[in-house]
Image 1 (cartoon, rainbow, N blue to C red):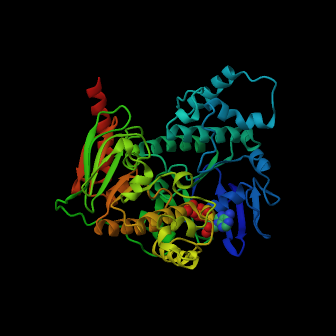
Image 2: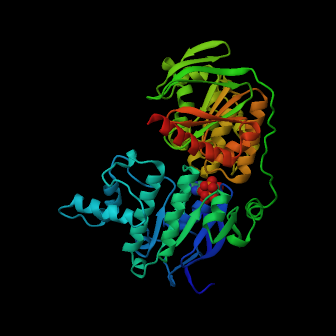
Image 3: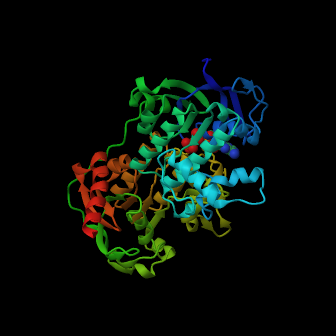
Length: 516
Ligand SMILES: Nc1ncnc2c1ncn2[C@@H]1O[C@H](COP(=O)(O)OP(=O)(O)OP(=O)(O)O)[C@@H](O)[C@H]1O
């Protein structure tokens, strides 16, 4: 045990039914450090955080010592907050329809209800709190009006204010726990967020961060704990550990990054889109070849993110799409018609739009192929279970128990299920929105290989993403958007992470200049 530890988790054990999710994890967090929590999907990271947050009751023998004091278990959520541990969970916990100042004050007002709230004065204080971190966010804007990174800032500054108001905060300390705060954010926003985290640790607080991004881990953390199958495998000093060594520790064996063999041959078009217009941007054309993977990207708000939805009839667009010789008016396309035409869409919003958390993995995964499982006597449940079992195996879904509700799987495993669901239909055009958000390194390589197999079988793929590493690994061609339309094209060997980032900024500044 180190002397300057603010928190000790000793022998934390957690069981869900027969499943042992944490098998005696012990680690300590030091004052003023950024501590990373790493591990494959389902390794137990969120479970450990939920034990600390007081959501889960750990087994007998588990011990939590906070600021030198052994805490009664399960932890009391209010007590842990009062003692100076604040959490930002993956979905940030903000109320979209309320203003920034209302969201910032919601916890304080929840514990004492004053007769009168002077919102103007509160807004001024909130603006000062942001300004202390060099942030300028309108306190009267609603959360819905903010960009994703601004929402993350609000959630983090709010948690930091909770720390300052806690017992630990009087000493300028506290522990801020961030569970995957960055999956929605493009690189430049991650940098701004890291600036905020650095100012927070400079004040003496400690930060615990869960992320799957190894480059981020190397940039921001001092030490990392690696979990595998509910056990602590190792604690590494980040600065002296190579990228590959961290990856190998996470996986337990060596996994090579998927590398696409990019052909240069011209492909016959699978889909041709002419005069597509979304929102107020000028119309444009695009086509995707048979078996081609086309990436679309840009800065947030540049318009690329709507494209998969527009081509599926899920958001309003005008224009014409030709698929297999059939001409389709996009303004009249519905998602049901799109699916009947051989299109598949995997939305980014995992449990909101893409899957049903309360239904089993089997029910989710077999949804698009349900007619194949319909017999004279109704649904062939054993057949559905076999299909689900086979796909779970193929895409390494863990645990391999397709009877479990989708919502009880870890985030990354949910995503594998939802991707498997659409890949089995061998679509003509597969539309993806951030397909590997929250998916661990090893599973990402498996998904990239599965997408590559689908492409080799002729599926055209459109992937909207701000994950440059992913785009570099899977795309044959990339269109970079600015102001609602594609402005730069990268192909073949031109596609590198650096080139993508540069193109995003270059195209935004060029189109801004042209507009003036
Ligand atoms: N409420 C629950 N009921 C049953 N099993 C659960 C529950 N919560 C988590 N689990 C299981 O515990 C294991 C660990 O899940 P956890 O969410 O902690 O993983 P994780 O490391 O955070 O993964 P990810 O990177 O995908 O978010 C998984 O196998 C998951 O299915």
